[in-house]
Every structure is written in structure tokens, then in C-alpha cells.
Image (cartoon, rainbow, N blue to C red; front, side):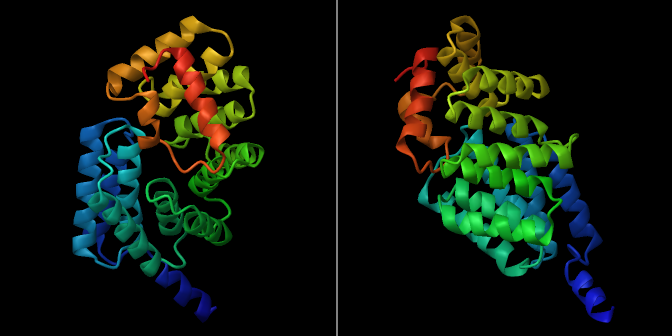
Length: 272
């Protein structure tokens, strides 16, 4: 019992109540997802929490995830220094939080998606699931890794697990949008369009959902819905082109998966 209590104490996120308050305020801003100013404020708050407690593993992981949102939404510059900062934050989260499922899942996701270190990211997410099999965000991140690896059936299972565990999760739009993408990779365009529509019900400016709505409706032969989604996507991210999709996407192992998405968005009217 003493050993268990010692280990539990080690997993406490921080001894500093002020640092934890900043962390929670950062989460509230982070969960606004499509608001650039809110994401910038979340990063500032997580960094402030780290300043108060330099050993706060989850704060490093969440800070790294702020950069995930900048890439998802097309705000990411992709400079070497910015990628290096994501890697630094994620690695520090892992060093400090070897038994912290949140820190491991968050840092693994950042390393896989932003740094393109897919193997290390996948291993960290799997480790998080060993530590806490009820952590919905870890199942979600693990599902995206399966999409990247070209295993969409396994991805769908992981996304479904995440939604069962946390049906009111602030990420529910992302759970649904990711499920749409997995169906798209399987050529199930009607199912993909349906899941994308559900994702956009939660947030009509969710860019992965808009990309999937545009591509899947185009491939399913519904040009009106496809063009509507593409038009809104272009309003939110005017720089997006078929040729610049790599700036917002992860490291797909199968070239045909990326080609399929490019073709869907090309049919939707996204410029080359």
C-alpha cells in the first residue's frame, strides 16, 4: 500500500496550485480549438505554468499540442526552429512524465503529427494506453496514428472507443472528423460525408471536418455540398492549395492515401 501511495503521489500533476490554475485556464482556451487568439493564449498559460513548476510534465505536453492546433488550422509556419520547439516540449514532457498518461499521449501526438516521428509518437501513445486504458484522447491520437500507417479499420475502432469513453468530450468534433477520414481512406464516401457533417455540427469552422466534407462529397458525386465546404475552407485558410496540403497533414505512409485526398479536394475545386 505504501508503494502504491508513493507512486500515486509521483503522478500528481504539480505541487503548485498556482501552476495548476494556469494549466486549467490554458485548457479552457485550448479547447476552443479553431480560435487562433485562444490558442496563442493557451500556449502562454501553459508556458507560465511551466515557469512556476519546471517539472510539470502535462503542461509541456499541452504546450506541444498547441502547435498541433496551429498546424491543423493552417497557422503553422513549419520553420526548423518551430519544429525544434515542439520536439523540445514533447521530449521534456516524456522525461518528466514517464508514468503520466496525459503527458505521454499529448507528446506522442505532437511528435507523430508535427515532427513526423511516427514510430516514437506511436510508442508513447501506446504507453499512455497501458497506463490508462480509459483515456479517450489517447485512443483518439492512437487512431490517427493508425490512419497515418494506412490502417483505417483499426483507426475506426480506436475512434469509436474514444467516443464511448467520453461522449461529451470537448474533442468530439475531432473524434467524428477523424472517423470521417478513416472511412474516406476505405472508399466509403457516403459514410465519410456523414461523419464530417456531424463534426461540423459541433463547430462549422473545424478545418479537418471541412476538408473531409469537401473531399468526400466530391467523391460521392455531390458537388453542391462539396463546393460549399470548399468555399468555407478557403475563407478560413486562403493559402490552402492541393500543392500545400502537406502543411496541414500528417505523415501518411501510403502515397495513395494522400493522392486520394488530393483528388477529392481537386474535384471539390481547391486550386492546385
